[in-house]
Length: 305
Ligand SMILES: Nc1nc2c(ncn2[C@@H]2O[C@H](COP(=O)(O)OP(=O)(O)OP(=O)(O)O)[C@@H](O)[C@H]2O)c(=O)[nH]1
Ligand SMILES: [Mg+2]
Image (tube, rainbow, N blue to C red; front, side, top):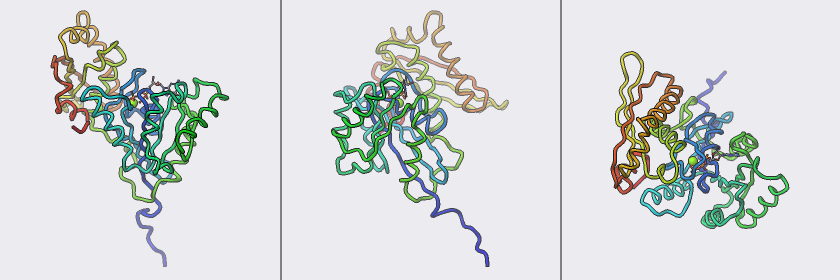
């Protein structure tokens, strides 16, 4: 007699891996690399990621849910505090915590401060990920791994280049082994768990981060206000860029609106590619000096306040 093979419960594995670390360590790059697509925005600037973002990867019969988090730094503003709380909160209840380090920076004060805060009772689930190994000499790398392991008893250490993909396979293979038996939480073809409206706002914020200098990226936020599916299959998206001062609004708009036009174009093209749909994007700039203290603005970016 033959039994019908029931849904693969018992064979499937699924678990959570949080990526934490200093700003700019390459957490989002790694999360995207493992998920195999753009889920989190990436820039050369610190504090790019502002909330927890879930990316999803599959390795054979294992679903790995990656929690990308904001970088950990000394918070000053309300937004900073919510970001750092989101980062530490991301590591809570995760099966594995991956501590992502910019290897070129090494065990500096910033990284020491983060490692010091790791739970020593949970060290078997805390792994060291030395990233950006393309930037330092191999000989230095092993000494660096040792230095970190003397500071905290990481249960595993990996040396990778998230950007180039080096060493990432080995990391994923190890994650696959340790993830608990469980049914998958997401459908097989889902790569991210982020509302589309938020993803769209993030894409625009990424372009603003890349184009604008000094403090301006940290003085603005982007929200998707309207999302209208059109009869012709395209979508009309309206977004607001909140800045704190009129002088900042002028810079965002640029001479004769060139800056915002350029940003809108780049964001629209990328969004259209991700959605597989034509996009009409409309950007508005509003001055709101207190947006950083407005809980609603923080909630809109996916932060708990
Ligand atoms: N050379 C090199 N650069 C990398 C590597 N991984 C990431 N980067 C670069 O490092 C910068 C920061 O990357 P992100 O992924 O945004 O860093 P993050 O840790 O998410 O930063 P926050 O969101 O600000 O906390 C970007 O310019 C990346 O292209 C790597 O393996 N090698
Ligand atoms: Mg990031």
